[in-house]
Length: 142
Figure 1: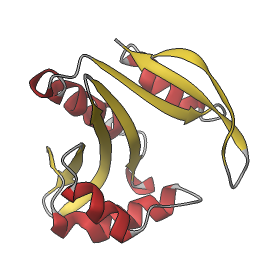
Figure 2: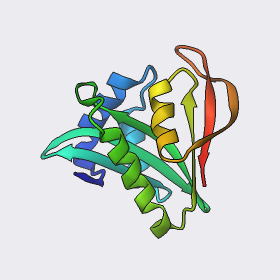
Figure 3: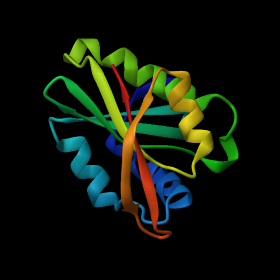
Figure 4: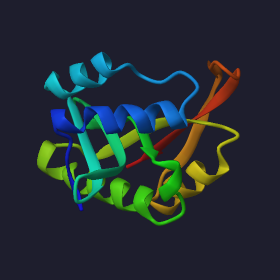
């Protein structure tokens, strides 16, 4: 099931964040995102278990994807695709007609996921990521 992130989900979302990223957001940062009018977060859940999440900021008529992650035990089950579909479905109701994101150039699986939904490379941000240092591909879907 895809639904909006709730404060009760933060411990599980934080655990997924820590398991997937070398520099995870803090619980406080995630809570701040929920409180922000510009932020929109969805989770994929199976009952009370959170399987993954996606978040984006609404900036004028654009959606900027801030992060997406799926618990490692649930990789390769289509959860990321369902999260992206859910996010894209929210866009029109929020007045969003295009989405953008940055992704590690070495993250071929994520790039393939975004390309499946019509995202295209629009350039490179040199040295965007730390731990390890890596360039980011800028992607857009209009």
